[in-house]
Image 1 (cartoon, rainbow, N blue to C red):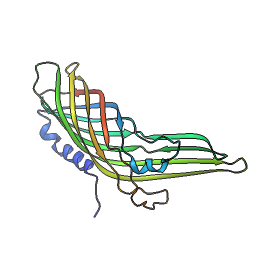
Image 2: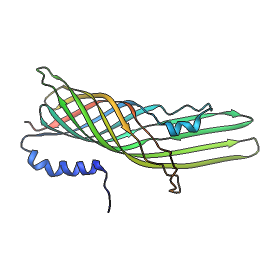
Image 3: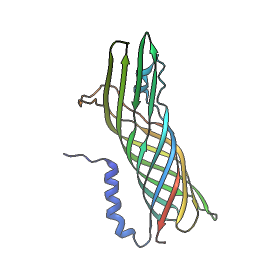
Image 4: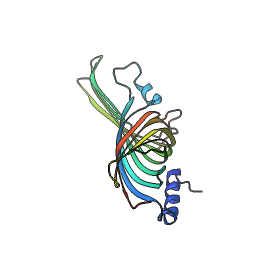
Length: 224
């Protein structure tokens, strides 16, 4: 039986529910960026004892759909790109090396935010969500001993389900434009990664668990 990522199921549910919500909800779009920290333990173990920095964080950005079903409840469905990279170059035991590893994630994330009542333009709340995360890793290692120069390249792929939660802020700039921000914690990890040949690597995964943040703008159309 074919399996579908949970985030796609949520999208289908939103599309089915759209006609029923159309009379009362505000629909909109939003975009954001923010800094995130990562665990990435298995990947970082590769560089243990070397001068290569660990992948400990990176910028994320994305955007997607917004549905405000009431002044207190906001639903969202976003694409998010999480960057993660490390690189180093130097000389070790007479061998010149150049290493570059990218371990980003492409994610589809569904979320819900509840805002507490407020008489001001600023509304604070709590937010949470679930997402489908897909690793899109690639690496290059070049070695030169003064006689021979060799370069190795490869890809690492995998996927998994993630969750997040935290605090949220919505500041109304106008009836249409809003500033939105959140900060919290994400748990997101793939299963065993696969190499360029599609071979699974046991007990080796990519993990973007850690602090997460977003700040951006959203634009709504229609009214309650």
